[in-house]
Image 1 (cartoon, rainbow, N blue to C red):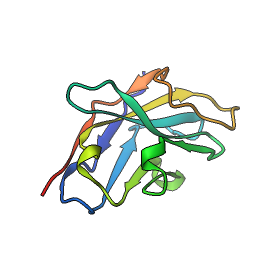
Image 2: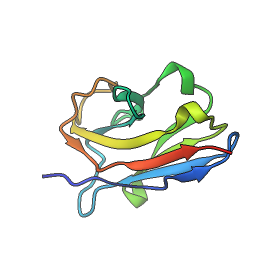
Image 3: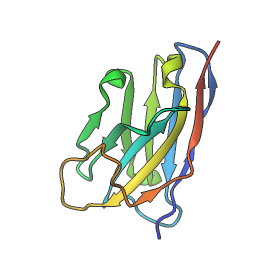
Image 4: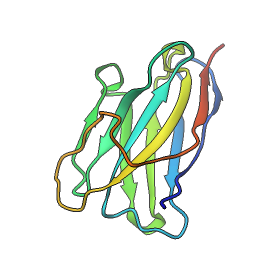
Length: 125
């Protein structure tokens, strides 16, 4: 069973930045496709960004140019750098993973095998 732990959420003013981290204690994430999802109150969970094992990426249209997903292999961590945040980005953000060592592409459909507990991101003045 893969355990995912998110961190880095918090309260930030509009226009500010946050960096979310996703780690799997004791497990190498190199062979896993990773995605970040978010769920705002009263809304469905939506895929925000994903990264394949070959570092292919995809993004939700409203976050393109503002968010960046990346892998830090040495730290066994996947990051979501979020810039130019606005109140519409307020949500609980979840990290998700699936074993996929061959595919060069990733998906933002929620068909991931493993999920973290989420970290709250609040954008407000």
